[in-house]
Length: 185
Length: 317
Image (cartoon, rainbow over all chains, first blue to last red; front, side):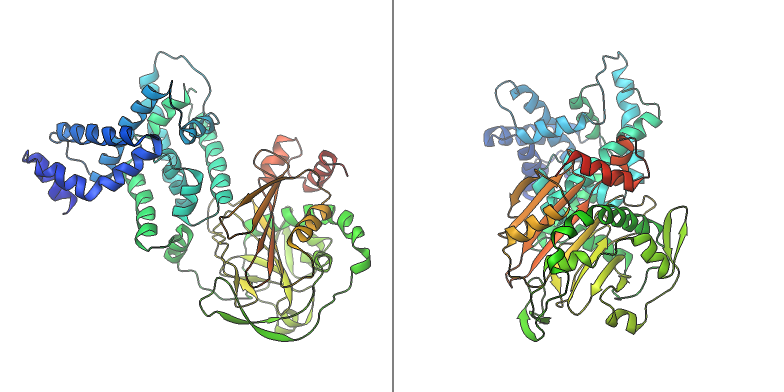
């Protein structure tokens, strides 16, 4: 079923929408959640929460890209669950991703975090737009999908070293870009 | 800001970027084997695979070449002195039909013979800038741009110190294309480690059209056959570079025997990898990462000569 048809089902408040979403995107959602959450039970719960949130979000939302919309919800829920579980369970991949992102930022307790977040989001979008496609894809697969280096390399059919070097340069560029744009870090 | 907050913010990037990245993974999965990101992007750019044609005006390529070349040339004498006894090419002539890993045609003619690594290293011109100028490169502010379009057949086939370029991958090749050769190419511009292609070349693609020139380059040494073990071969490269205490890591990502060692920094200034192919050939890749970054961070911007000295000082023999 086409994405637009699935979205229409949501708008018509047909419960078939969730079934169709699951048929088409369960593996996709599960992959994103599993990149973040090591526990299968957490992944399953995350997907259930995600389907519920999608049900509650559409309508009024009519996403341009249903895949990205879906993935974003799963990612956010999984990250929140990860934070919740953090004290007891640690996913080395997510921990490594967080450490790597230290390259781009510095500590701050600014009270304008929300404003800054929007600023940074816009800047990151601009930055990604200007990035070479291959570097951008690796960056997104690593920091949006939170894939392991090995998995990024496999998906992009490059060596892990290539992925590491690309990510290293991109992080440095991103930091420089944010500083140039006057983003408070 | 906490890094976890940045991770959250990255979560709100435009849908288009996510779709774009998803498409790559979907294609990789759907094909049953990995569909290369670079193969995809390069196909879009419709590069032609015409060998032995010089690339006109690739300043970035020349910068990379000079960066690697000068560095290597300043380090190499240390290594070459260790191989003073084996400076002549020792090859047993003859050809055989040999299966070549990574190609669909499965057979290719590869000259048999024993090639000492030192002979190959010795093929690297000691002064690449001079070498290039002698061969028609123009220097502009320390960068070298080829001015001729293609070497003659005599140049390609006759001279062991020959060099040529490949329009499809923007690599620079040195050596004898019928026997052994080494290549310098931009590492982060789409080079694919796809093995030996047609017995002479490996399949590789690269993009120099980027507005942001690559800062890395790779110098690949192809050893068609040798009487040394893979460990010995790799260690010779390390020794030749006078670099000590390399960090070795092993991986199976490129076959059962893949080694890499990274030297000179957290993300590596030099990386040496060796590949042992099933047909008994070896590839050793020496890559230089972040040359400019390294120099800048050490206050030796633009001076690759100084960098070579710095590397030697950091790794005293």
